Image 1: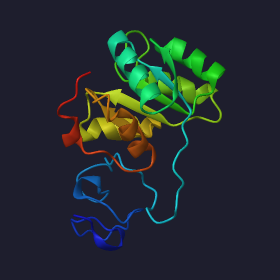
Image 2 (image 1 turned 30 degrees about the vertical axis):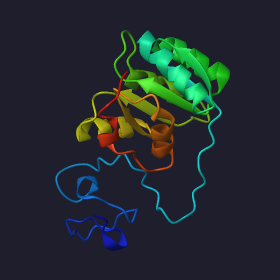
Image 3 (image 1 turned 180 degrees about the vertical axis):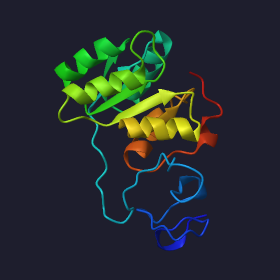
Length: 184
């Protein structure tokens, strides 16, 4: 249900920055732009993002272990694991990752606070993808307003996690229907 010429399917006259706007992405009616998709035009030839080193900040040990195994084995990425926001900030400054995967809900310093502090001390700032079960449009808009590139829904399917991450980084989002059989 793509719309022609960068306008939403609601038919509003507000021009949009992509030619693939869906009704729930529209700036024009009923609230903020809640798209997880990139706001870059699809036809400018943006190169795929190159990932070699990923920092994962996640308090759940089981999720860390499963993500590390899949991201290293399937994604062929080096993975650095941290269990808290402060440890993650320290590792980010030391390791200079190409991508940060950040849990939203953690004890002590939560994900949004961690991202805010990272932005204060990292330059350049790598893309940040939140990992969360909270994927309502208002929450996604909030995460993006903080500077997150996008969101990967928990629970996620370990087999498709690298592809989901690349879809977020390259401006398209994997379908949530593929996440119904997630195991972690």
